[in-house]
Image (tube, rainbow over all chains, first blue to last red; front, top):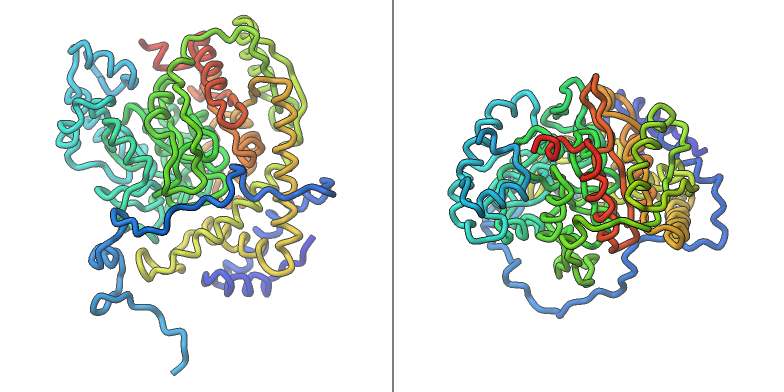
Length: 99
Length: 462
């Protein structure tokens, strides 16, 4: 069983970019422990020499011609239609570099 | 003729063909019913303002303009697509899902978008950011989920048929709880393009309908290869209409999971109901499979991990609100998935889960050497009471325990009503599973079961 405490949750909250309050953090510790208890049952299963399955289709290297699909292109107006904040035809993004 | 919204797709097409009714007559009854019932049941988040305008363009096509309800995680340009989340509450998609495009091409009209657990995370339709949906069979109970709105729309006759999506139970479990048919195709059989991604390695769109025949009609419209979804299969789509009204004599049926502890109270019902298969000449045998409890662990890790990755795109920059607006359930899942994929834990959780997933695939392969199809209860019991999912971290996973093994293996399955409790008016479902791309076998059995038992409320009425 992994050690889960409020510091773990704070770290994960940073990684996932999801703000959580102190009260939520406490609740999430509890939820994590409950969920991991179910997951930890997997350790009872012997998986020696078993390969992992990441997808079930057995398809590999599905390629297409490197051509522009014009019917899928959006106009600038369409692309910006759902944003809350645009500036002269651009998306406005939060600053990530310090001044 | 009254209440034309009670018709099945097949019956409606027949009556239109004979010129006994017009499509517009159906819409008159349907729109009245929606007006009357939608407030209490909270099924539709949005409806098409003028469906008859669309109907006029469809009269020469197969589905003749009949109304189809679609879960609100399929992108359509004519209505908002919210995934029942506050983050996307105003999102209007600039492009369209392949499934809805195909429905329209076949002559269906998307009459409205139905409620779901927010982001399809759940099995109750209680985690919707826009309020819970109620089960039309008994409004003190949940419809199941995550396609609860679509199943409830069918059960309440607020559409003729509906589309849902499933990762592990989200079509079949609500279909069972609402006393309808839920058809989950093989993974890769129906395109995921334009469906708001949840767990990409198991997401499968599928019909929720009044009868097996209606499910087949919709399946034929939506199944097939799509260059926009690299996991979709190029295999030819079989004509499943041919499987209706066929014999199931000598079909080998394996019965799974009846010895699971949680099924104690309903085990006898299933044993009794399965006798019909024997009467129809099939060979029915109780058999053992890998403990479904382990599939709960596998599914939880895989689903949370893929969710954390898929929902990373919701940054509030190009569309939607920022990440502080995620509801409790989405937060919980994204963060757990971030954890199971994080440094030091990926091996311990994610890779271990994917190995156990292989064991389930191998287990099914072995079972299908012996049996043509496998059957099991869809859910461990009847629809739970309103409020049951609140404050529990694992509600859905445990409700979907019997569906998770075949879902992580990519297998197709169909749930048909197999019992009705007279006191509560609630239903149980029978889940019929087949090998990958053998939808024909499960449809044949499901259709035979439906036509030889009294549990389908539309067949009873007709």
